[in-house]
Length: 210
Image (cartoon, rainbow, N blue to C red):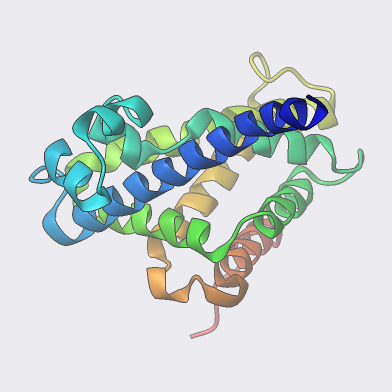
């Protein structure tokens, strides 16, 4: 009986792992099709077939193909908020952001970085999807503005400074991700590029050497 109890306790974890694995397979298939065939011309039926799942299974994980492209925005924003909260008080907000992103990056595998850059490639290749790019970063801007407000003793809604810092940082992150080629995601290239971008902002945006 004790063994049965242990097995029943482990089952939910295995189910969660299986659901996550299925979601990632669908996500990988969809992003590959979006990148090679085009977002608009790719159908849910094609994504399901490429992933080896039913259309019903696709909709269990993603209401629409747009949700695949956007990804888990709320989860990513929550991760950023937690990582920022773990940074010491007194740090410049952008220094805290750089450290927070580095901490998040240490928890991500190469495949996750590849998905990030592949999303950027898809959005960059289809200009009508750019509103989705803004949506991808809007949640990060809100989280960062709240962190800047906390560090500076200001109000994220009434005072301009937190939103200004957040807007500049989000623009730097967006420009970096959108310009980095997917094949350069190995060996921390994404983290290095983000470090460089935020360092450039911290230095006052000096003109790079020719």
